[in-house]
Each structure stands twice: as structure tokens, then as C-alpha cells.
Length: 131
Image 1 (cartoon, rainbow, N blue to C red):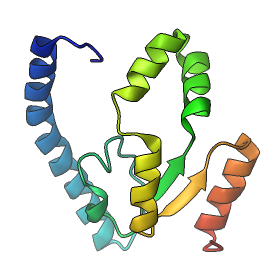
Image 2: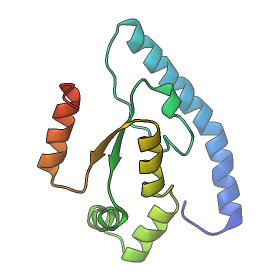
Image 3: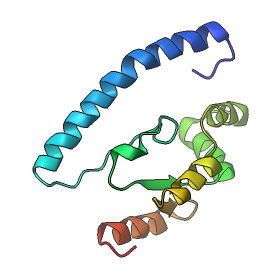
Image 4: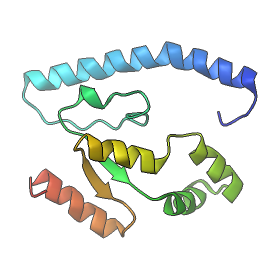
């Protein structure tokens, strides 16, 4: 997935072009069913800003982590090298760009650079409409 090979990238684009519409259709079905019952739903969307899907949602919560911490956590979680972690992260939209998009759109931002306890407190605030 993180290869420089143009043949591999072309194949991945073909796969994306097949899968993304199917995923969006399923996501829309779920959203529409939940809205009928006036239910609150949470959907994790890995490429939310890259695919401009943020307009699908009433509210967006962006969980922000700076690149240094993102690299450290990826290495720890995936047991990969620093170079591999950087390659994976650099294949994505930059976190500061995403944060700026979130700020422009008035999305809720959770700072995930702190402890897990801090992050849980921020989530509780949001769920209790304290933010």
C-alpha cells in the first residue's frame, strides 16, 4: 500500500474506485436507518477529509495527534521501524492540514497528545454537551 511502484499505486486506485462507492452506500444506509429513529451514531471514517466526506455528518469530531507522537505510537502499536512508520504516515494527509480543515469547519477537536485519561474526559465532555 505504501509502495512507490506506479503499477501498485494504479492497482490500488482501481480497488479504491470499486470499494469506496460500496462503502459510501453502506454508510448512507446505516445513517438513514438511524436518523429515522432519531438515534445518535458514531462512524469512524479513516479518509474523512481526504475524500471530503465530512459534509455527510451533522458533527465531526477530529482526534488530533501531532506527527511526533503519531510516529511513536505507530511504532509501538505495529512494532515497525521508524522509517516504516514515517512512510505510512507520509502516505496520508498531513495531521496539521486535517486540524486546519477541522478548525475551518468548526469541527470538534480532541487533543490526543495527552494521556488516555485526558482523552476519555474530553470524550465525556462532548457526550454530555459540555464542549
